[in-house]
Image (cartoon, rainbow, N blue to C red; front, side, top):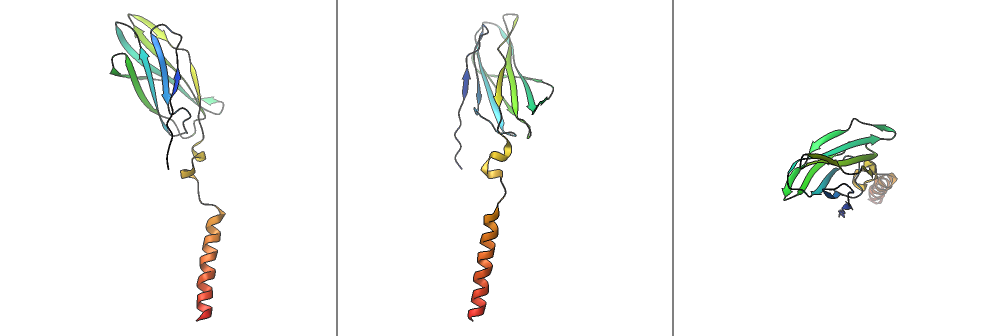
Length: 144
C-alpha cells in the first residue's frame, strides 16, 4: 500500500513563532503525528507542544511535551494518538528572551482507525471463495 504524506503548514500569529506544521495532515486514530515549529529569537530556552485529544465530546487532560531542536530555531516532536481519538487541539508554547509566547490553538480532525483498508476484516467475498473451492472439489470427486 502506498501512503501519501502531507504536511499542514500554519503561520502562527504570535511574535517569535514563525510557523507550525503537523504531518500527516489528516491522521488516523492510533497514528503517530509529527509536529514542527520554527521559532525566531536570540534566547530560546523552552519550546513545548501543548496537546489535547478528544473522543467525541469528551476531551482528555492536556499534555505538555518538550520539543527537540533539530536545527537552529527548528523544533520537532512526535506524538502517537489514542485509538479512539476523533479530534486534537494543539498549540506551541515557547519561552523567548524571557517571555512566554503561545501560538494560536489549532484543531485536527482525526479519521477513525477502521477507515484504513488494512484494518478491515474480510467480508462476504471470502464465503464465496470457500463455497467455490468446495464445489470444485465436490465435482472432481463425482467425476472420478
